[in-house]
Image (tube, rainbow, N blue to C red; front, side, top):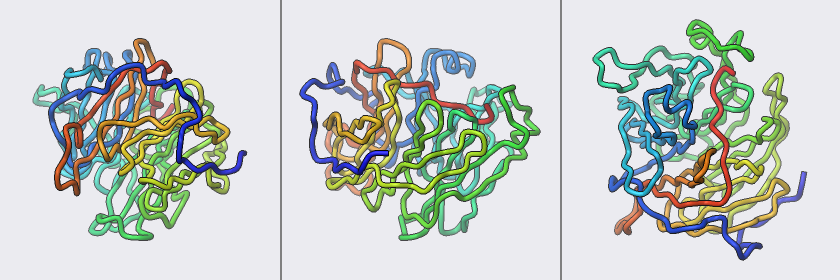
Length: 332
């Protein structure tokens, strides 16, 4: 693995962003996060039509879908009564979510509203419900789900990164009973504000952020067991704080920089390929479409901003020249 880099500039003059940034919707969120591309096939199967991007507003517990096109809007898909960190598809075509202090299953509401509602708790995070909450979370290419937790106010040392695995899961689709008997392990603690993680296409490399310390970390992952090697520094962010992230189809890491008003794109060896300005000061997560025409979708936050500018707190997008990967599912 390469030595750490410092993210303070760009090495390429040609940008992978090929057009203007635009708002997907006029709604302004305190803390939108969890942008993912679930792919057109999964979107159709979920009843989302062609809305193949999802994202959340953490404090309000809401899940949205969108095509990611300018002005396309955000469609409400779930409205929970606890903070919602992120959601993922399951191998059986359902949903799980990091919500409150748990990982839960989401199921269609019986009233025909089309909304997803909270069902069984499949794993309880090892946290104090009064002091902590979930933050970001993502599934890996081998069907595990990796949620983070943090203190309600970002208190030092109150965060952790965990791994959730469905008992008996394998390449075949898993049953609801197997989904509901997941096992959870803490893989990295103590932390303060964990973000990510993101995985290489083969699942052997995991990236995650120590947001409050400005560090992007990298660790090896055993594909069979999910065992995590000792994390090492991948990049140090000096201006702003690393937040949500994703890995594109070329194996490059895209990092949203909260407070930095930009995205950073790194080569797998740690070289900074591009610093990409975005028209919002607090980008929180990033997702890329897996099918052409390619777009990047970025969630942003308006929290703690006295005078939010035009796109602060909005979900924004732009055309790009590089593809992403369809978000992985739990239990595969």
